[in-house]
Image (cartoon, rainbow, N blue to C red; front, side, top):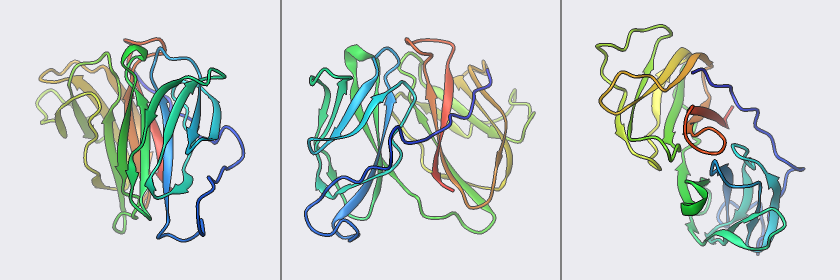
Length: 228
């Protein structure tokens, strides 16, 4: 199944979370992006250190990168207007580092999945891509990153036996068009097919496998623009 490139935008004007000291000082701040990835959860509000940074975030939407204080950072995810935490986490964020937190899994088991992002530019002429298994109803998967139309029948997976909640390392590949296909581990049965995706030199992207809204198949994917 082909997936659509999700149009990523802030749900409100860009929000900078207040911090002690100078927010522009890379020694005291980090960047944090939150993604609603729980397929049967309602729209959510997201708070950082008690301040609401995004409201009414729907499934598969994200906040974009927000500047937050480094160190111990309180992250809360609540059903819209409920003031009841579905997720409450306090990760220790390193200064001058980018992070993505996924509000993942089905609602009954919703959990924060914290990823450390590497937004350093790829080497000249290349693209950096990582893949995240964010579909709670899917088994462990194999991932094929190939030229468009390539036959995977005898191909070795680019990534093998990736479990839910696991992110790959960053793959550095020459700029060009690619096809990303996902199969249940050990099979050639394609459950996610990107079709031909053009990737320009210098960009960094995160591809996340997802459940359908409500949970389960048909599975899809979103692509996050990490670095343009």
